[in-house]
Image 1 (tube, rainbow, N blue to C red):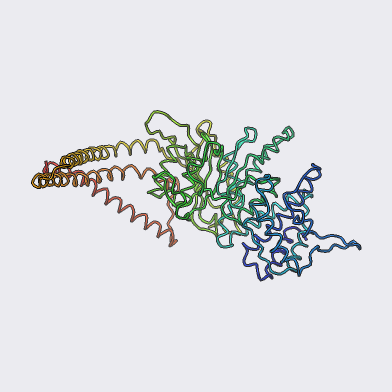
Image 2: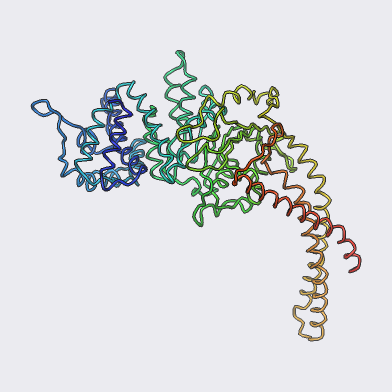
Length: 592
């Protein structure tokens, strides 16, 4: 029986167990057992290399001393614990020991064990069925065999892919074609010892892609230090227990001996000012969870203009301001809603285009993340700009290139059985060029186009400036009237004369009456300028080189209808604002 069939037979055994409910629990159950099995075999290698090696696991709870089948006097392999006693041992001895008796401060290995098991669960209730699973693992998994080791990594990747249909668990898996393409384009360099982080690492898909990318840079001339460096260059943070367990095991299967750089933490729960320069990395590659919201209080210390509870928005703010080093490179998966969203999303896009050079947006078609979500997604590639002194606002983004990734011939959508494949990205790779010459070799084609963001921004600023200037002048007039009111109010201090106080109160009321219409006019003028300026941060750019196809898809028609209603409302508001601005001068003149 091959390895893939063995894993399927193990899952079939678990389906008979009353305690294991659904694919996510089956995978979680299998993974903690697989982790202990693989870790034990890695320990055998470490013991061979180092006679003084000490296991972070208490001796009684190492896989070899409770789970591994042992040969009896007749040479027949038998379990060490009877099926009738196994569940009690796992629930009452093994898990309490691994959760509560491991001191994470002793070594990186202790930390890994502690984090893996602190929220892990044993779901199985049948001892005989657990023994059957252990027997399958014992027969099939020999991590000392390099062919098995490579095969196990592929099988595990397929298991994670299968998890896409397991309810919310699907959010933790990004298709391998996407992770490999993004790692390839960001191109972290092993020779430069460039650090890579995924702050929402899920099951570790991006990190394994980076590991493969680093290893492809090794040659016969590479030193042992080069090979060891890979482990130190990758960093991952994952909030939830199941994906953290899956990721840590994934790292072991991909040859990372001590995956202590995979933290079991909520990245967004770390205080804004707790991040420091030592936390910055050269490259970030991530698919932050989108559509979700953090609990109250999380992110409350973010700067006021960046404060939000939407997860993807919080990650973007954190990546730009706290995680990415100057001249560092990033690739991030984001939904269409980020591209056309306004409000906090508009503020974040301004921050992105100002502080970073957003050079490429790959627009993916629907279905890439099916069945977890059918929302269209995009791959944003950007480089953190150098800090510019001088006080004036400086934008690092001048030109933004778009590439619309097409379906393969004959496809109308992607699915679990027809996923996106890495070879589909070959046209993008050939078109890409190099950032060293500002992508001068890129050309527009049926799928690729660019926008001159610098010109677009300068024109919008020039058109909006008169409105903003008028708003400033009106606000200054309001401030002057409020200053007069304050002085008058101070003049009443210590005065008890009723006539005098009534006179001053009347003057203050008159000043307020003058200030209120000016304040409204200032607000309208500011809004008129904003309506001209802020639309430049709508990055939902259609492909101008592709003829518009007529569609009868209800979802697309509804989307177009909503967009049209928004454009109508925007036009109406702009007309009202311009009329108000044009007539405001007359009203001010009458009051004076």
